[in-house]
Image 1 (tube, helix red, strand yellow):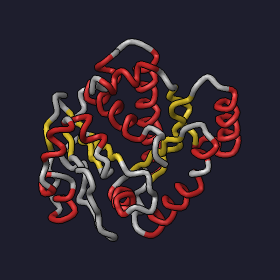
Image 2: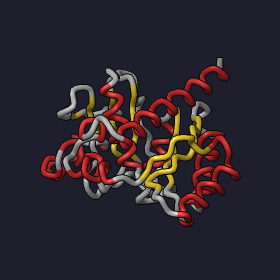
Image 3: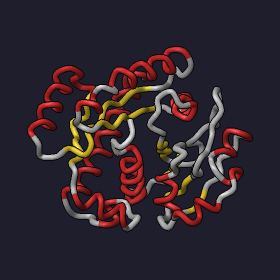
Length: 239
């Protein structure tokens, strides 16, 4: 679903992980190119030729990294109006970096989403605490099952992330229902709707670079810790 904070989650996690000394590759598979424009600026993204974007990976298997102003973050950008053919696949994403984060389009039936699931090890699905947002859960689970069972046995679902939660009774009620229905599949960490996130986005900075101290940055750090803890749980089971 669009508007649930997929791009902002990728951006803020990338910023924090680079602060921790990890090398991060961000891959933008959304043809709106919002994540690409954040890291590289609208003017540069609009001037990119397709063979300097993620399209090169689909055509030739080569990831074209672009440096950002953040030392350990590089991005493989999308471009506006990009079209990915059905059945397209991606090369190995994180062979030469510590972490690769993939931003996907909102359409679960998109070839880009399928390509991302085929190439990934772990999935986080952001949700906004609205009725329509929670309705997408079944579609997410079906897509994960279809790809994971049939084509990518390494794929693991880390959980649903409640994003942009406001201090509204309906948001609290939906969170309660989601936790009762889906239990541990819902992250303990909740990302609230805070002005600091919007201000950071407006300045094209991850939240930990815009305002390192404060609730917003603390939430991203908590999310990062929980993501890695959940990953480690899967690795222990596999071992």
